[in-house]
Image (cartoon, rainbow, N blue to C red; front, side, top):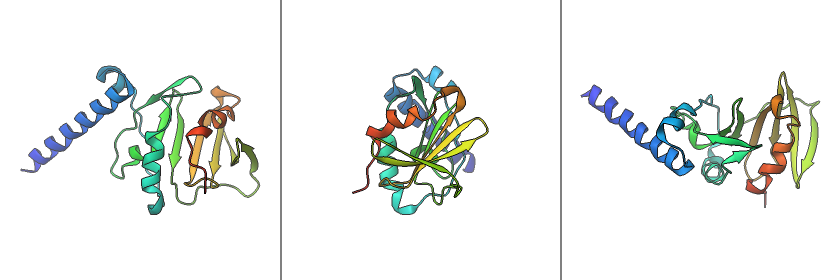
Length: 160
């Protein structure tokens, strides 16, 4: 009986992945190769619904990189995060207490305030001035990394 439940669950994930691939306009073969895991992270419970809506409305391309499918996880991070390209540009929505050092430089792009957190090979941009918390990690191969903020700003929910 348990093996049957696991088989049904696995089949359900395959059907879900196929549906995502069709929505993104790619074949299942190429889509499976483009899946990527995003580590689970704590999410503000009140932001989950808004994050799911935000993720659904994000563009298919970012900095000329195609959107990839986030591998399903036990905490359903695939519904609240998005990934483009290889190396990956990763957007995380609703993260509870994102780590932003006090000395971090801040910028405003298209009316949205962002903290710039330098990484070894790129930047993470964090905004808590939106209707939901959003962080975007951009590898340095997409330099200047800040360009991602201009591209994505129209897709983000501005705080009322």
